[in-house]
Length: 94
Image (tube, rainbow, N blue to C red; front, top):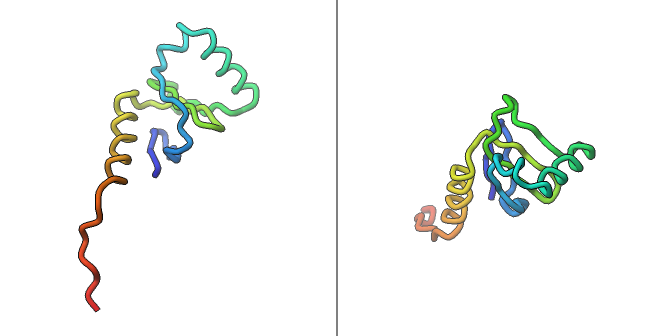
């Protein structure tokens, strides 16, 4: 399934490694180092208006999302729930 993470970015949910709060960047030197390293490799996609609330880490790219961690979590959970629903649609009539 796919998740819309804001700024016209849609990613596959299977590629998501982590979704973390943007405010944690300054409190973790490991996260800072990872982002600096990925910026050098041009694998960071910043939020258009520089209003990032969350960082979405995928297997290839780091996205700065204007959506909150809570909103992204709800979207990811919604996709999981939709995947688990049984198909109760009627068979097409011939």
